[in-house]
Image 1 (cartoon, rainbow, N blue to C red):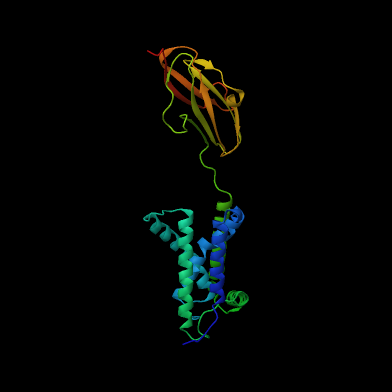
Image 2 (cartoon, rainbow, N blue to C red):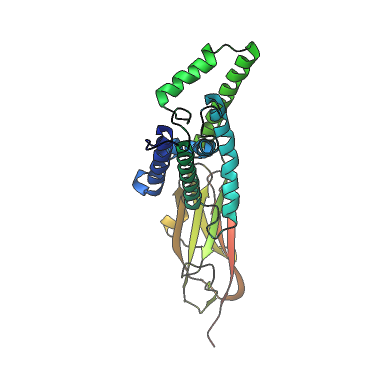
Length: 295
């Protein structure tokens, strides 16, 4: 049994990457999209499988470098969904922080198990990866080791398949496909909730609602809004009649309603037009109001 031994450099590197990813994701000033992507990809695609392989196969003779690399990718793709499935049945659910903490805990526990199992082996038999030595060993294994032509072709195909898969995933993450193009148009009561709308008025009395627009059109939109009571246009300030919104921007403003005439069951319409068609409402909402003398 081996005595005191330094912590394996590959396990140290894996643990350091996990901690670094946690820091850059959890601390808001540091979590830029590029860093999150650069650190998050190995965290999801490689490190869980590598840590598990290190724990299961602590000896050098168990697996060679290419086998460890290929299995690390393959097992990571299997481990992450299983962790997500488990989280789905917990109070935390499938959210960023629970997934990050679960993955981090799994990887660090597997690194600890791998270190413990390697300590049980003689130092010369225990697997230990050093970046320069691993690169040279991989080069020797791929290029210089005498193998059949078919073995070499399969090895090259395996390496290119892994690289192509990683490159494809990076492309998908950095250039996400556009979703459905739509605009949200809604009315809230004076307290900002979807209830308690002012629907009963005395002559000359006014009420207030909050009108909201959310742009999900993947481009800047120039909207115009009208308010009509029984097809009669009501006055609106300029900032409510013409609204320009960038993609994913939300606009909410209070609108004062002053009914100009009396009636029961009158239709109060809020009409939203987009920049391409000024005659046909793009979205419309309405309330039914009563304007009567108080008895």
